[in-house]
Length: 94
Image 1 (tube, rainbow, N blue to C red):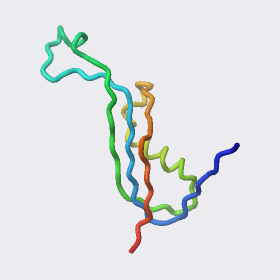
Image 2 (image 1 turned 90 degrees about the vertical axis):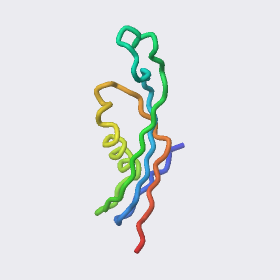
Image 3 (image 1 turned 60 degrees about the vertical axis):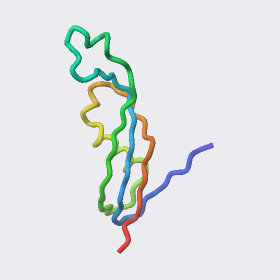
Image 4 (image 1 turned 120 degrees about the vertical axis):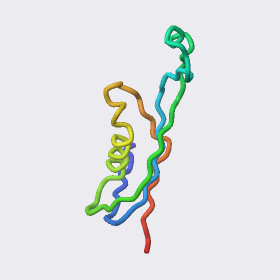
């Protein structure tokens, strides 16, 4: 069954984004010789929010993907799998 495509109308919007990605945590002040043994895998989160003006009709997933790329641009070379856990668009009124 094909999924429906949500089109966002032109206007001013607030957005809130949360993404998660796997990472390795090394405790602060770990001596260099213990960095590998003290490191452990974890999940990190990043948050982004703001406001933007949309001048034409756009598919919602393209807007989401734009903000995910912007929030995670430093991770691109690391081939990290980023999971979007929250993406909200709210029209700005007034």
